[in-house]
Image (cartoon, rainbow, N blue to C red):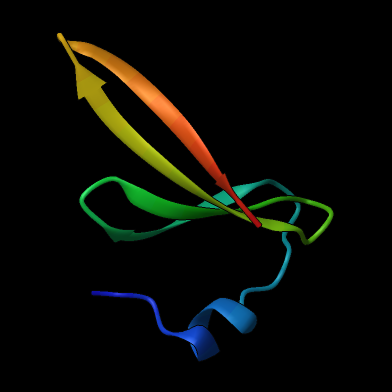
Length: 55
């Protein structure tokens, strides 16, 4: 299920970093400090890669 702006704004920090999935490898990482960053996990030639898109 796609994330909406309201859902993203309401994400709160926890004791440990956690991921909230959007779709097909795209997710938001919520850190202990409360900062949020978009990340995209994908594969090229069987190797897993991680692209950090930004806040």
